[in-house]
Amino acid sequence: MTVEITSPEPDGDTLLSVRDLKVHFDTSDGVVKAVDGVSFDLAKGETLGVVGESGSGKSVSFMTIMGLITRKQAHIEGEVVFRGQNVLDMPADEMRSIRGSGMAMIFQDPISSLHPLYKVGWQIVEAIQAHEEVEKKVAWERAVEALERVGIPNAPQRARQYPHEFSGGMLQRAMIAMALVLNPDLLIADEPTTALDVTVQAQILSLIDRLQQEFRMAVVLVTHDLGVIAEHADNVNVMYAGKLVERGNRDQTYYDSHHPYTWGLLQSISRLDEKQERLRPIKGGPPSLINVPKGCSFHPRCPYRFDPCDKVVPELVEEEFGHSSACHLSIEEKKRIFASEVVVSS
Image 1: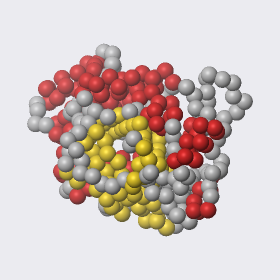
Image 2: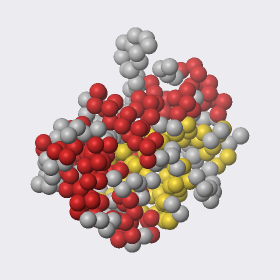
Image 3: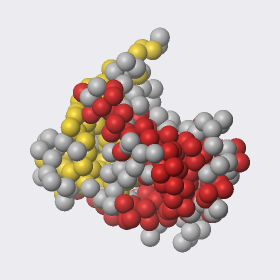
Image 4: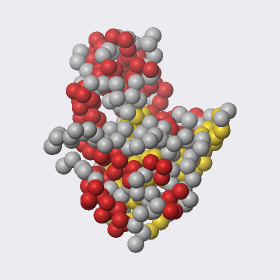
């Protein structure tokens, strides 16, 4: 039996509650439905992985939650309740006070997020003084301490250097230091390791894990890399064409997933435990967000589509134990197909 997800009142452990979030952009070619009705909750201390191809709405969702995309730039509907307040209705100055002290975000390209003409330490000082009335000397000491905490050697000297004097990995550490210097409750990491080599990627992700435990904060990992999600997330949101198509815990997503798009993502991962002649990519490409297909937006690429798929939009429904998906296949068919056809690395 399936039960449609409703919008319950957040409980005491809920830090962030998103309900029917829509973010649409007007363009000369038509309306881009970048995010089209996304709902989820994030608990205190939880690590949420958000996965999907480029253009699925991952980054736009969380940039809107952060207040970096506003109603001046897009048509925004829904609710984003953070610590009991709907941030979408907040005046800009109130949102600025929450951004940094309540929630913080790091991006995949740190060099574009730091001012090239200001020393790294002073940029962290500026972030501190924007939210707290502290003397510059005290803020400087905290900035150096933050750089030390994220593993930057010779932090007092490094703090006096410019961004171009840092390596990519050190820049990302500096961005993490800036994001966490005000002890936020929520850290959003948007593709934080994309531009880094494999060794540095592992170091940055381990650093985020350690700091999460130290600060007891919630973390959102936005990525296209299911391997990152497997190692670091508690729960997983799978997005496609601006919608949430599957949500479950890590084990449900990897070992009992219910959506054909998730199956395609899993099958496109290389395996180390057996020889593979080639990967199994998802056929076709993501749809235009101006002309989204009728019915299920994934149906043109889905090998399991049948009559309702091109006509009726499937609702995201909870099927068992908090595991939800948006697919017309019955739960029995999903389990049968997954068990017989989807190859998952153990």
